[in-house]
Image (cartoon, rainbow, N blue to C red; front, top):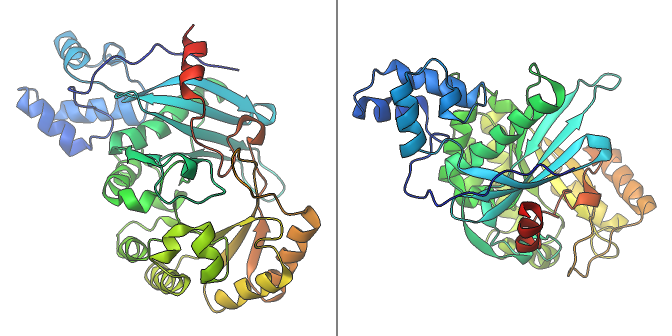
Amino acid sequence: MAVLLRSTSSVEARPSLVGMAAADLRALFEAWGEPGYRARQVARWLYQQFVFDPFEMRDLPLRLRERLATETIALPLEAVTERSADEGLTHKALLRLSDGSLVESVLMRYPARDRSRSRRTVCVSSQVGCAVGCPFCATGLLGLKRNLTPGEIVGQVLYFARRLREIEGDGANLTNVVLMGEGEPLANFRNVWRAIEILNAPDGVGLGARRVTISTSGLAPRIRELAAKPLQVGLAVSLHAPTDDLRNRLVPVNRRYSIAEVIDACRAYVSATRRRVSFEYAMMRDVNDSLEQARQVAALLDGLLAHVNLIPLNHVDGSPFEPSPWSRILAFQRVIQERGISCTVRSERGNDIEGACGQLRARAADTISRDALG
């Protein structure tokens, strides 16, 4: 399935409404000579009704709708294509930003099972490309192009919030947001945090902070900064190796912030938030999947409120790494669990549309755009 929208015109000079908190909207309308309550009206349309056409904001006077349509943009991105997988439970969107840059986001729907409730999670990008350069990650092969703005980050959430209601009906709402798409969120921390504040605010999206998770390759100072923030969002750390020698190769930022520094920062996070840290570990055949390495991971996390999430490596063109055999993944898991550390194997989504972990990179974007737009 592909959902095609019109191409984005050049709108860089116009302010984006999505990405403005209620106070920002109020300042805009007061500068226009409008009453302050217009901010609440527009925020409700944008962040709770997911309406981005000013002419559909029915409680605004026509003159204001016309001015919004000509002097601002509501949503600073548009879909080029959308593909689905997993019998329609996973959707990946290629999104064009106002400057022509492209990013990808993924919606994952999980039906209720046994004791678990249904979840609707959107995985969003924080940068165009990524500077970390992990050799097994498609995004890392792109290099960093630029940071995303708060509006571009929130806009990905709103795009799929609207799509979810189109798919499931008016009562459907997102339950979780994970910043695990393209980019290193903590390298764009100021914009990411402003986006989180908008997602959390009652006059914004109204999503609980505990339903938001930031993933990082291990920027230790920023982890400490996150620990000091008033909103207790979740933290996931891409570990992928138990020793500095190996992690220097797999996660190059380790040359700047060693495993010991990252673990110390995680202890500070746990102490401040009382929340456990999830450690992501991509399983690579004959690289990081031995039983001895499992014991090293367990020793590294001993005494820390932690969860290990084993990720079967996903195929990435141009990467020399291969996924571990399933039997080796399960053996690795048992070693960690036997040492009293919570450990699960991630059930991957969207692999056949390159929407799984480590696969996002807006590949062949020019060709996709031309095909999609005819």
